[in-house]
Amino acid sequence: MEIKDFIKTDVVIVGSGVAGLFAALCLPADKEILVITKEDLKECDSYLAQGGVCVLKDVNDFNCYFEDTMKAGHYENNPESVRVMIEQSTEVIGTLVELGVKFDTDDDGDFDYTREGAHRRNRILHHKDETGKEITATLLRIAKKKENITFVTQTTMIDFIEKNNTCYGIVCEDEYGEMGAIIADDIILATGGIGGLFLNSTNFPHITGDSFALALKHGVELQDMNYIQIHPTTLYSKKKGRRFLISESVRGEGAILLNENGERFTDELQPRDVVTNAIVDEMAKFGTDHVYITLPTMSSEEAAKRFPNIYDACIDEGYDITKDKVPVTPAQHYMMGGVKTDINGKTTMEHLYAVGETACNGVHGRNRLASNSLLESLVFAKRAAILIAESTDKKELDLPDIDLKSYPDKKSREKEFKTLIMNEIQGKDPEFYDKWCNNEN
Image (cartoon, rainbow, N blue to C red; front, side, top):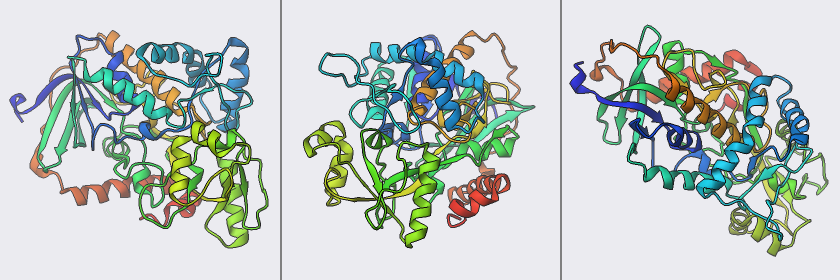
């Protein structure tokens, strides 16, 4: 194609969640940035994050926080990534506060830190039970006012424009099926995880791992694609669609899990994978497809104030979580693996970066510690933006031939992408695939 057939920008960011937005805001104002998103701007998993965001409260907590993260990840984490995330957490949270993000405070006006599973200390900041929404909405409001940032919605990335392991841009398809190409100096993938490929997931259904499928097609290295977190407690329902998460922070405030006989069967503040396995075992023992959660440590009024979104969702289903046994079941929640990156978001393809849940820098290991996801997205998105801003590496405009008419239709493409990803997971971990994925294809 001739260059006149392309849209040209400095940086294209695929995804409008916390990672994509923060990367855009951390890039210099003289860079033209185009942010594309598959659906509407607010339909990203960052909006759904309930529990909170971790922060290093003081230097005395570093070793404890580091060990909690490593232990939750079964010590398969990249220690350097963990160190970077924790050390830079205070600065990043300070930036959020300066930008106007509101975190809950106690009666004295100090931050109200809470604790979740596998945390030994209270180090999690929160905004009621909608922390992700508060952060994402604030970043989006600011980004919309920036003259150098343009948003395009209802637009799906369907290919990388790549030659000799250098990324020149992406091919996109809009909601009307029209295809086009975007050429950029640098490309940032922030497309989230793979929840849309699962029957039961807390993710939006359009989050289908497109970046992973394209990485497989173009030889971009992936890491730990079988490290997929199953969240232990989502509101049980026979209805199809996204599963409503009952945050780990509810258990952090005293909620307990009960089996069919009304018996408590596990320590609710263990790492997520441990609690999930305990629930699966209990369901198998009783031949059920759910267990129960209840919050006896709070009154209805206290729960409605601390967890308004969760409390209302349970009420809508006919349960008062402080008095009743609320049925819950595990569901796919988060991807710890993904597109392999270094600690600056750089992938194995030149001028291609990945941030947020799409990226795997090893910070989470085999299992993510609660409330590290928002922090990880923010810290490493900023590092990627700084690296791009400081880079003096310029690529020659040596574009590969692109035939927009050669791409398959949407349905065929989605089937191909899902097959690529599921085959990768199966090859890495047949046991996990058979347990959680085999009924998804």
